[in-house]
Amino acid sequence: MNDLMNMTKALADESRVRVVAALSRHEELCGCQVVELLRLATPTVSRHMAVLQSAGLVQSRKEGRWVYYALAKDFPVHLRAWLDSALADAEEIQADRLVLEEIVSCTVQDLCRDQKKRKEEAL
Amino acid sequence: MNDLMNMTKALADESRVRVVAALSRHEELCGCQVVELLRLATPTVSRHMAVLQSAGLVQSRKEGRWVYYALAKDFPVHLRAWLDSALADAEEIQADRLVLEEIVSCTVQDLCRDQKKRKEEAL
DNA sequence: TTATTAGTTTGTCAGTTAGCAAAATATAAA
DNA sequence: TTTATATTTTGCTAACTGACAAACTAATAA
Image 1: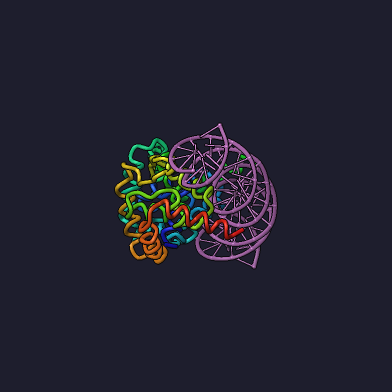
Image 2 (image 1 turned 90 degrees about the vertical axis):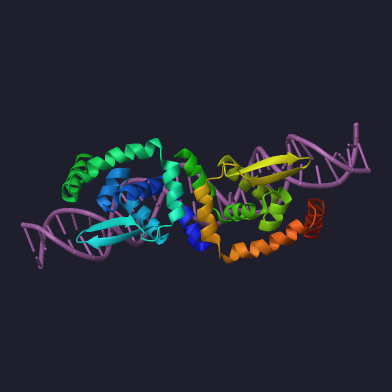
């Protein structure tokens, strides 16, 4: 029961569901790409990813300075089916899909550089 | 997306998941039976059932003084499959099953009478 | 080594939520 | 009508959660 509750609680947040939906289509996303998608502060995103990981819904691997996230290999099949059908025509997810195409069309290096620039301009 | 989030938030509470699991096996349960199962204060249970209903996971009908709850007719199929498999051998749910057998073995009238007695003794 | 940078951890604040008691509502029984 | 009773609503408190900034870690680059 505890395992299930960790999952339901992880899914009780819109940002985290959006990440799961994104990973359902994109195989792997690195931290800065998720930051770009959600447009939340880096620490907040890090927290969200930690919650998803400790719930067993997401796994990660580290490559150099970057952390790549993916759906857990044993992501519950029925859960995925439910999410897919429930989100099939959700506007927010469709918008995310467009943003994601942009995000993955450039290298993570370029993406990080752009983010840094934006952050500096915001001061 | 909003519909989905209402569901995930409704399921992000152990008591509410236990109720859904109970209704997955018992077709209909009245309010006092749910109180008996969860052993929470009546107002608390009423709140939980309201959350489940406004999420569209549970429906209710009123019969005299009693309110009977059931899983919503259009309860998402894949969600149900996920919950069933995830809770198949959860200890808490197995314990609930035994309690439920007791609960449904007497009439709601008798159950309410017992609850009233217990409440008076607690003063 | 020193500087840079992707990500995490910590501290704090605002908003949300589960819990109960008490009051209110609705329906049946006397 | 009055009483009893099953459930809901309201008001309150304590615990939890998401957000950010600032400090910290880990790993590459100069």
